[in-house]
Image (cartoon, rainbow, N blue to C red; front, side, top):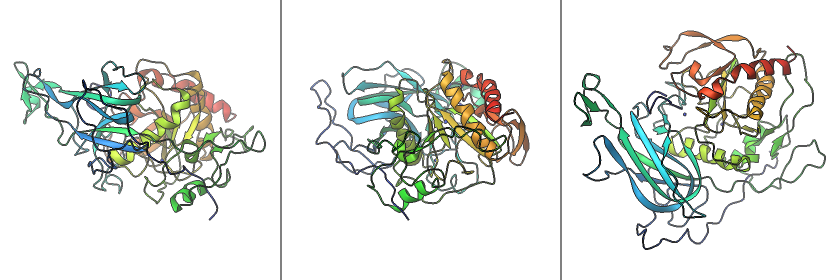
Length: 456
């Protein structure tokens, strides 16, 4: 995710997925003091109307509008305080993914349970640093949009948004949006800015307990779609089709390959397999792991992590236009590991996590924001366990160095052979604050611990 204020700073048998959900009869009622009608729920960021009833697992898309002539200099568009259908994750998108948002996006939300409004919270800008590599089919699909990082706010039914352009010297701009202080102008804001309000849905029904304490969990079949079966079959050599959990190994299977940690599958966190593109895309091997933070904030309980991931998944695909969830794996603050982009946890699945360096790498996102908050020791240990296993499968030493060829970006030109740590932070491949100063500072511990797990 972009860190310096909103500038260059963001996976023929039975298988089981979520039961179809029936929308509730209505959303929360609107009081006389909040007279605005709720927006329609739309399946995509274009705002195609689907229903005015609350639809679990859906996206509301609202255009940002001028907030009035009396707004302060530099203030841009926004969304006035209003009632909306229930949502739990929020972000802002715009038309051109190549256009950077030089400015500040702030949001406050109303808790559905209490009616209390939050303080203003800032969205991290997310301008192309978490994305598919340039000139790949995913990046040139025509569906991709620019976007902020999504923010997890919990179940909410009201929202307000404001945007302020950042000022720059006149010499730095040829097409100013508006004049700011003397000698400065405001950067032009991207066109087509829209507010995306994501309801992550309820996911899969709870998994049944395994027959033994070590076996993978499975559930009864509810979805036999090709997408569901295919996603689960990619891991069939590790767990039965429809398993919600890939079990951990107790010891190393072979030298320098760490024991496999337990991994919650896409089935386990309730992925809607109908969202993603049907085909999987692979690279040759996994030579490096890039560690990220999701920048979705830290106000989630570990029991909510599957909902957070479902929200990110929908935001990446429906709002940003990617082919699937961008990260290969996700880790929550309690140290639980989740499968990200579909294609198989042991395989070299091409992700969209580190612009310019997605080939021959994997992306691991720790759920939360770690610019000033230190990650939990459980999360750092999970990074070490995951990389010890996955990098070990591909013959890589977590404490070592490797070379990756840049696909293009703001640090290295396309084609440059770049020497990187086998476990790197996002900022090592792109000029960004991700994975946050505090998480980045723990990568040395993750490297040494992963090497020990490998028996080095």
